[in-house]
Amino acid sequence: MARDEVARAASPGAISEARDRAEPCVRGWNGVVGPGYDACVAELTRDQAIAVLEQGNAMLGVLFARLSDASIERPRTIGGGDWSAKDLMGHVAFWEELAVDLLAAQRERRPPRVAAIVGPGGVDRANAEDQARSATMPLAEVRARAAAAHRALVDGIAALDDAAWQATPAHGADRGRSLGRMLGSITGAPDRPFGHAWAHLADLEAYVAAAADA
Image (cartoon, rainbow, N blue to C red; front, side):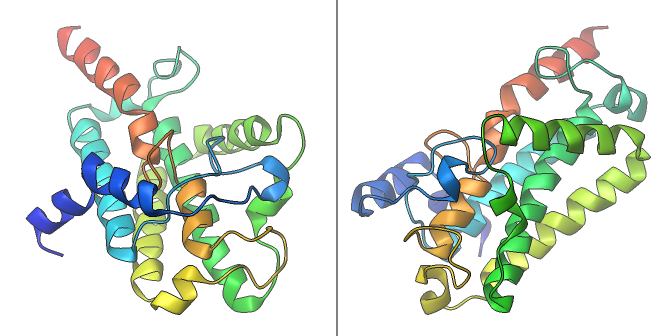
């Protein structure tokens, strides 16, 4: 897609229009979805989904690029002081990896990894476990992980046809939601399917500004 098409497809107006057109959703994963956001997300088109993912990734990339490596790795600087910017990079990668696994699970007719994140505190526990993993990884490895997860997700969505995008899961772990909707909630933010980046932009922007003033 051209840059102006990406911006147009990812705009709040386009997403709102898609949400208004969408039929009421059916909650799945036993009520556990994505990074803990609303399961009832709009079903965007594949092009819109890719546009939102690419725009979010680009905005995070611009902010990360304004930080030194030492600032990215500095602990307890993001999200109320719990994470480093490196942890945030790994966190976004983690949920994109889960979305990539969902695509593979659909092809292989098996439950996806995200289906195991069930019960009270499941999402928080999964996030904490992944944060501990990211904390031990070199920054270069986290960067490579994030880039690989994002590219695999975008390429995986681009490879789908409309029938696959709108299909309900073959593995039976969900109750009626399409593959597109499930991907949108796994990588979503409140009121923004596929917009996980937007849930963290304010925290990262604040840290970038503070680091520049230091």
